[in-house]
Image 1 (cartoon, rainbow, N blue to C red):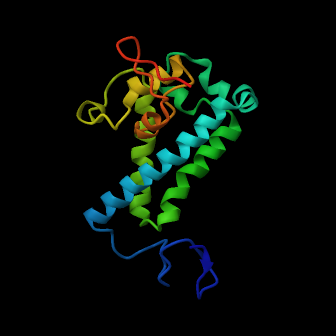
Image 2 (cartoon, helix red, strand yellow):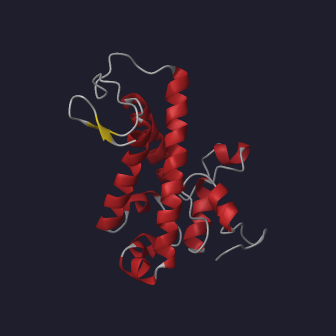
Length: 180
């Protein structure tokens, strides 16, 4: 996967010799949607395990991640209220998926806009999202609010399947607590 192409440039996936940073054409709508959704899924997986490790490690939680959890009831500015190391790591995790799949720059920007919007939405304290109403796979703000109330649950930022798989979904008083 990772190799040097004929222009002595490092490539990870799609290296066909053209200038991938400034393509002449936009991706098709299908390519844009597939790459954006793939990036969301990959980021969600990376973030779930990275986030979960920060809650399982007393050292990481105490010195890094606890800053983000100073608020039990999140509001929009809490999205970026975090330790510098955490912000840097999340930034790296955000650019890895588009790079890893060789996404078109427009797909990368679409992914980043959706990811930032979803992160801000998850920290608003309001239930604006429609996705969690039509699909149980999307967490939404209520899912993330419950994470801030019960920090050893609901680790995923967007979807819910890794939390379901690991038994870390917290539904609340109306449901069953599956915390660690």
